[in-house]
Image (cartoon, rainbow, N blue to C red; front, side, top):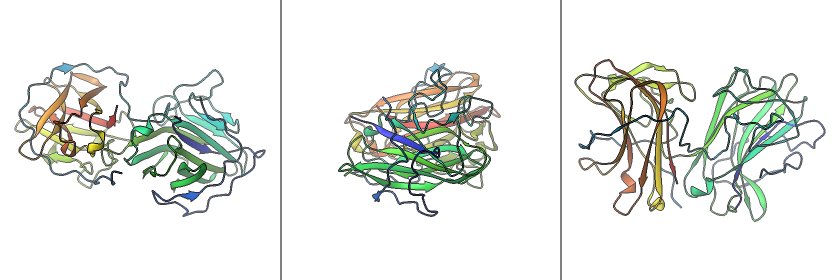
Amino acid sequence: MGGLVILFALGAGSCSNPTPPQDGDAQKAGTLTPVPPPPSPVPVPSPVPPMPASAAPVEQPAPAAPAEPVQAPSKPVHDANVAPNGSFEEKDDNGRPRGWAISPATSIAKDGEDAQHGKGFLSLTGEKDSWTVIFCELAGADRYPDTPLRMEAWGKAPAAESMKIALICTEDGEEKEVSAKYWPVSEDWGKIEFLATIPEASDKGSAKLRILIKQGAGSGFALDNIRVIPDFLSGNGSLEDKDDTGRPRGWVVSPNDIIVKTGAPAYDGAQALALKGQAEFNGIIAHDILISSAYRAKTLVVSAWARSNSTPGLTMYVESGETGKVKALSSHQWAPSAEWQQGVIRVELGENIDTESLKVRFVLPRLADEEYAIDMVQASIE
C-alpha cells in the first residue's frame, strides 16, 4: 500500500508551469477540487466526527503508586510525525534529503546555523517565475483514517511571489485538493499549519502534502520542521498557543501561578512552557486525549520532552475515567537533568478502558521555586 505524500513546489524555467494559484483560493477541509498536474513528472520515493477543540476540566489525580524514575534518552524514541526526515537532518552523498523527491533538481544549499530546528534544513534556489515541487511518502498515515491530521511546516522565502500548502488525495484515479492554505512570505522563519481529514472516498495511501512556491527575483527559499500528526491534542501539543495569562489554550492549569509567563527556550518550535513549583500544592497541567473507540485494541503512545531538576521529579500520567473516578493507567517520572529528556508512555486500549475519557496529566511535586519546562507533547497510535 502506498503512503501519504508531502509535496513542495519551486521549479526551473525548463519545466512547464502549473496553473498559478490565486490569492484567497484556500479550500475548506473535506472539499474535493480538481488539481492541475505538477509542473513536471516527479519520481515517487522508494467516520469519526471532528474532535472537540478544548479540554474538559480535569480534577486532581487519583492516588497512584509512585512512578519509578527513568532516565529517558536524549534522542527521541517516539515521534508521532508521519512525514519522514521532516527536519531534513538525513542527507545522501549529494546533499539531497533522504525520503524526499525534488523536481526539478534545484540547487541545494548545505546546512548552516540558520536551521529552524536541529542542524539540517532544506535550502533551495530557483529562477524568477519558476516553480518547484517537493514531496515525500507519509508512511503510517493510514493509521488515522477518521482523525483530523495537522499539517505543520516552517519556511522563509523573501523573494517568493506565492507560497501555498495543500493536502491532495486521489479519488478514482484523479488528484483532487482537499484543503489548502497560503503561506505568509517573509525573510524570517514563519510557521504554516492547518487541519484536514482524508475523505472516505479517497483511494487508500493516496494523500500528499504539496507546497507550491512561485519564485520572484532574487534568492531562493528554505523549509524545515515539516510535521503531519494526528490531532489528538487540539493542535497545541507544543503548548505554544497561549492566552493573555500565559496559559496554553486547551490545557487545564492548576494553580494558575505555576506558569512562568516568559516561557523557556524550546526543545522544538519557538518556546517551551516554563513552570515553577509551590510548597503548598501539586501543580497540574492536563489535556483530554481526543480519541475514539475506533482505536480500541490498539496501543496509544504518549510522549513529551521535559527538563526537571528536582527529586522527586516532574511526572506524566495517562489516565481514564470521569471526574471523581480517575484512574492512572501508566506514568513516567523524569530523573533530575538540566537537559531535555523525552518521556514515553504506552497504553493498550483494551475493553476495560474508556477511550472517551483519556487524559494526559503532568504533576509538579510540592517543592517551592523548583523550575520545570515541558515541550512537544505528542499522542499517536501503534
